Amino acid sequence: MLMQVSYLSDAFDDLVRAALSALTHGTIETAVFNDEPGTYRWRLTPSGEFLNIKITTYDDPFAREKDPSGYLSFDADCRLRTFAGAVLAAGQQLLIAHGEEGYMKQWKYPFPTAPLAQLKQALREK
Image 1 (tube, rainbow, N blue to C red):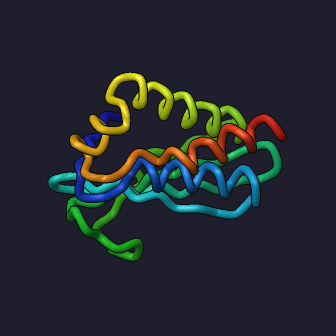
Image 2: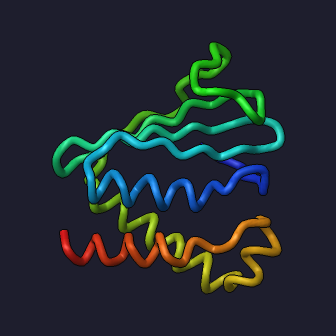
């Protein structure tokens, strides 16, 4: 599934924080990626060591969760640590590729340095 993400939302920060909370608190979390046009709403549902990831796609760039136009475009299970590790690795690659300044310039939001460090620490402790 190819997903385009724009600067309309702080998508990576949402994903990092959702992964962190799912890992540390075991809570169901949501991350929203807005596009032009469209919205991808990630729902992360942890269950013990595992995680269910559902992505609902909407044509409207600012669709709400209950919008009936959404359709399930992705549904998969994986290990929670594997997913959190992949989010951490993606953040490290973004930082290498763009740096904090370049990230801000491209996506109009600050790089999520603190949440990413917290995710790294949580992975060490789990």
